[in-house]
Image (cartoon, rainbow, N blue to C red):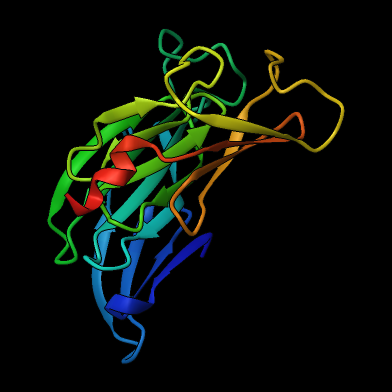
Length: 208
């Protein structure tokens, strides 16, 4: 088991395997309910797959799965081998209903580092070294808004400096994301800072 996610409100626990398979168990009964499997854009047998991130919507029980695939250069033909000795890294993000119907799936640029479902269950917050931090619609996984604080001045944000490095640095990457109790968005930056977005309209529309 390389990753887990618990949906206590829907009596469900997800566990991810190194082969990319995700098992769905009942917490109360300890019974295997379903087996999920998604793929990134990387064909067999040239790829090794890993279930990387899991999340469960607290009310609806919808399940989000992020799987990575890496080409094995030893098995690839010379014409398809990556310039990297470790092989090309691809990723896929999928959302399933609580009954395991696949609702949507999209490719990602490499590995996501963090995913969080909003309390309203309509939006998915994502970040990674290769992907810009963004909010995606849960049912389609289409990008609703990209969170770039120094280019999108329409967003209200605050920077919290933890050390003396500059979070505007090109080397700074947003790897961790979270929601506050009021569903303000918090982004953790590798330079040692936090970015907090206040009252994002998409999250404030949940009761409309």
